[in-house]
Image (cartoon, rainbow, N blue to C red; front, side, top):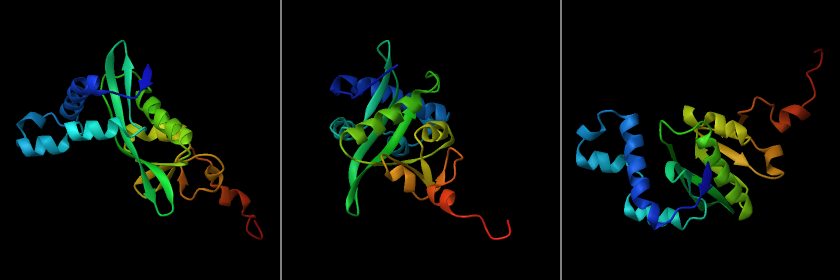
Length: 175
């Protein structure tokens, strides 16, 4: 599997993939009102043009066929930039670990641009990928902290390891 940025030559394939994913998620998708269908799709022409330039959006390709995509962008949160994943979609018949590879491509691109936090929702289909990236849950989102920030990150660790502050807390008296 190859994870790469996409270009305008991929737009038609991305739109077809997005439609396949939406139909798999909601079998009655085609019976919805046109406005509802359009609202569920992630690949409008303006969205594709925006995410193509974002530096953090990728497609998963194998043998010339797209199996998934991740759309992410840099945003400022307080006094620091973060990468915010808007959507990660994978075709139901995609090879195993496609979501993990897409998420990892985004994490690597964030690190390469000196952004050390990646925020993303964690549906059940993305939990294994989030765990592989050492994410912590903070509310409804997972956050992958890069570098030394990973050691002191707040939240519930998905890999089952105790948070750094829990490892330093001495046991209670009499325990």
